[in-house]
Amino acid sequence: MGARAQWLDGRRFVGLALGGLGALLVALVLVPFRDDIDNANLALLLVLVVVVAAVLGGSGAAVVAAITATMAFDFFLTKPYTSMRIDSADDIEAAIIMLAVGLVVGAVASRGRRFRRERERAADAIARVHRIAACIAESGPLESERRLDGIVEAVRTELTALLRLRDCHLEYAPFQWPLPRLERSGTIETSEHAYTGDGFVLPEWGVQLPVLTAGREVARFVLMGDPDVAVTLEERVVAVALADQLGSAFSMAGPSEVERLERDAASDEAT
Image (cartoon, rainbow, N blue to C red; front, side, top):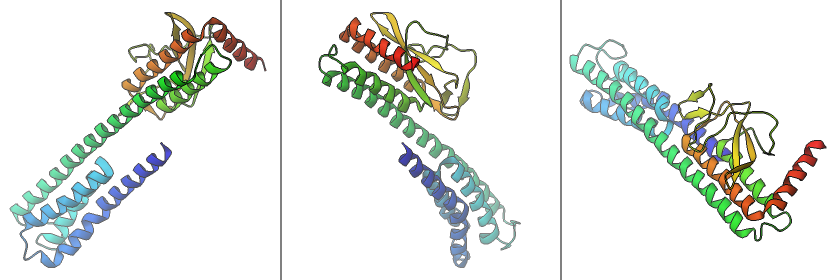
């Protein structure tokens, strides 16, 4: 995730650089040809720069490119040259259309990037469920010593990565304090919600994710969210599925093994 984030940040930087400088450089390159090429075609060439900036850098780069391209078109390629004044109505129309097209392309590119990112996150979330299922299937008899410990740790690790948590730990009943509950529908029972463009932010003070065995809540994960990270509804639903998988593992392991985990947890808290 870190390497991918760095790659995306680098791509956005390239898009912004292209939006800010690329349109200006292209306009300068076209200066020798401005008397031979129709201004509408010159504007189309600059729109191509806006499209490339939008694909690489998203909506921010597209807006920068659209504004820069329009100003460069006005200053270098329309009469009177090297002036922000435009005498021709056709050139004014071309500049307005170029700015509008650039902004629309930026919005479309940003939306496409968001949908692609959501698909990738959904596929990643489903892969986590498959990994836990494989972990349970390959663990052998769960009533054996320490088999369940690895599954608990695997689920905790997947939850932390899935929801980009600051902290995640498992508690056994009875619980010491109440927390907002992550419901099976993916909603959170709290009166306060923080929202960003990508989804809701998990409360910093913690959310409880129940672990159920035969309909009985035997444990809960405490999820400590990052205030800078939004979590989608699909990711929250997958988190519930991961907790359900642990509940199934508890059922297969039997009461004695679960009790051992409770004693170990209590011992760790005491020390």
